[in-house]
Length: 171
Image 1: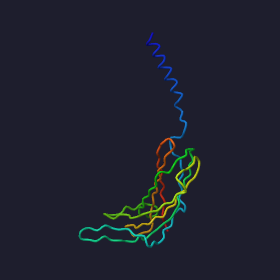
Image 2: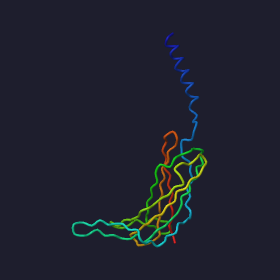
Image 3: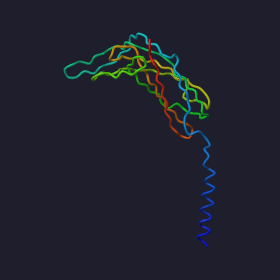
Image 4: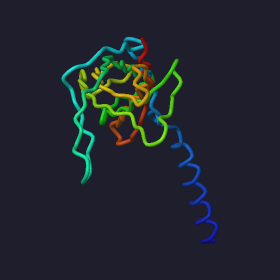
């Protein structure tokens, strides 16, 4: 008899848990990222430099970034989930017609950026924006590039999300 009562209690508890399966809030981030302008335009740059470290037989070399671009990433939350922007990063890669061109040998893309945000919070179904100034030097000596912007988000429950956008830089 005890086994029957115990089994009935387990069955009753399990059936009650099934009713709790419905999620009460979104579990994925739904944002639309847009670059303004699209494509971003390259401009000549002066005054911003980077250093190529030398070795025992070669001194450090200080070079100016030849190119600069500016754009804004607009963030539109569409899933009804308020989030905070927790991190921003980007990568610059040489491109042609929007196609990435991998550097040959040991050549590397060099870049630095500044960003300015309208704030770190995006309301549910709200908007925010992050502006960028990017200085860059490409191994192919070109000015056309693809800038990948990566944004990290956190919701009120501690869930983390990432979203990225490729921003074309073309003339």
